[in-house]
Length: 422
Ligand code: LLP
Image (cartoon, rainbow, N blue to C red; front, top):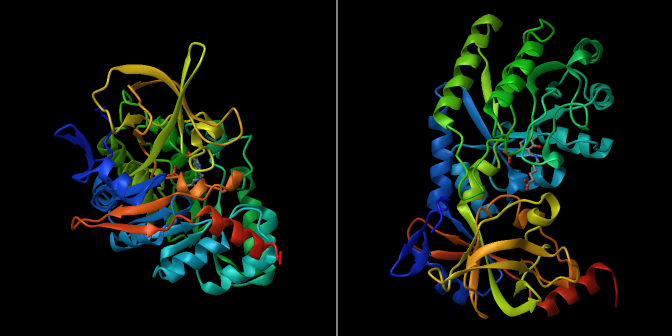
């Protein structure tokens, strides 16, 4: 067993999650299958609150990472709010019991219609461009607003998910703060929060702290005397590679708290500190199980063909992301090097290339670890293959189906209906 957490353990030669045998669950629900561990996710939410020794601390789950209402419910019960990035996410969050004061809406390049409809719900609007701020001020004068700044720090595990610096589309430039002030004064807007998100999967915590300092320097500029909170976004990294050294979250939490305390004293008004973690909360709490149906050799390459593909877990193809893979059916088998391929008609459809996995036989179940964030949520039905089912391993020992898998015939019927085909 590798050293990634995922609450996996081996009992009598069977790989278990939350104490339950994974091959039995795979046989019961069929594959491809996402499995989530309730206790683990609830534990992560609790842990967040403990790692940063500060009062007035609030966490907002980045719902884009996983929007299954059953998981959102665990997260809500743990005291977190929601970081929403679209009108759809706001709707879902409200209907799942998150009150408007527990939702922050940070969408970019929105229409006026979306802005107005979301503003009416009473959630906090986080605005990241002067153009949108002007439109917001005109349409909703004398309201409260949060402003997203570009922290001018480049960090994050892939270039596509770095959100600071020159090459990003996000946020207002820090040097534009005086222009912000002109607009907010013109429309009587109260700036209640300042926000930044630096990137996802930040291994170098010094960069995160630098980015926070940059935002605090804007907050302390004297231009924004009515702040109630500072929102430092998400980006807390979790290990994906077996040998990866995890971030020291105790030290990091202390450094964050210390900085913020110092700033609070200088600012002279009580302020809350917000974060918007996604991966940290659910990535390691989920796994994805696929089944090998074809073994073949392409000269010196061993290919294990599975019953899923990149539409169900796109991170390897999209970012070159690494997901650890375990052969659940044969964990102690002699390791070989495989390409783990999907069933989609594209050569790039691989979960892993040249990956050492315990000997794979046709019919074996494979688990891809760290699949609780940005996996199902980024899924599609490309090639008309239905999305996987999702199952929650509940704290009390039950396993509960929390999302049905459509049959291919149902998917075909849905397409006929949606396209208004007779
Ligand atoms: N807040 C904002 C404004 C964000 O844009 C994001 C992520 C987060 C919070 C949460 O970041 P996290 O704590 O999860 O790192 N699909 C990519 C990740 C995209 C992240 C986009 N924004 C992946 O699979 O790695």
